[in-house]
Amino acid sequence: MPAARARSYASAQPAERPQKRGQVRLVSDRSKQRAHAQQQNALAQACQTTFRYVGAAVAILVFLGLGGVFINAEATRCSQQSALIKADISNQTAYAQSLELKYATMRNSERIEKIAIDEMGMVPTGNKVSAIDIGAQPSDSVQKTRQSAPKNATLTRLAQLTTGEASALLVGDINLAFTR
Image 1: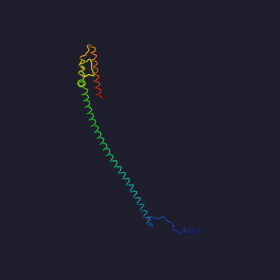
Image 2: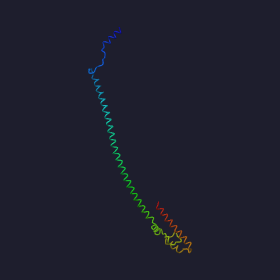
Image 3: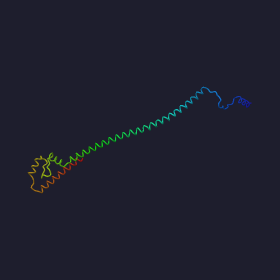
Image 4: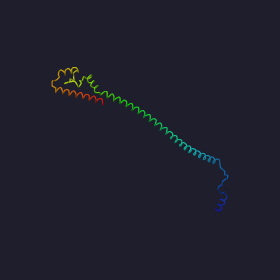
């Protein structure tokens, strides 16, 4: 009997049949709300994805547009720096030329000889001087050399050569000082 009972119980319950299209079925409010919420979530996700793509495209376009602006601004800045450097170079070149002119004027041998005679009390190389007294005044040394001039021509010639070499060394030292 138990088998017969199971068969009768199974036949008493309606079998679930697949619904055909176009048939109406009973849906509760809760399942309606759930389905509506799912549709809204799907729509929101689609909108968010679209917004992200559009935002990325706009960001790329803005970046590309600002790239050109940045390159132009950098080129302008470099051009201005180049103009400043060129102006500085021309100023320094003019200053170097003025220094070269001043150097040429200062190293003139006639000017050096005039300073040596007038300010330092030196005697020109053309004059015959046999001895130089370093500690005395220029006028005293000239008088002493005239008074104590040796009679020997060889000694006089030797003194003249020494004086000429000293003068050449002095002029050479002055030229070296100007080149530094």
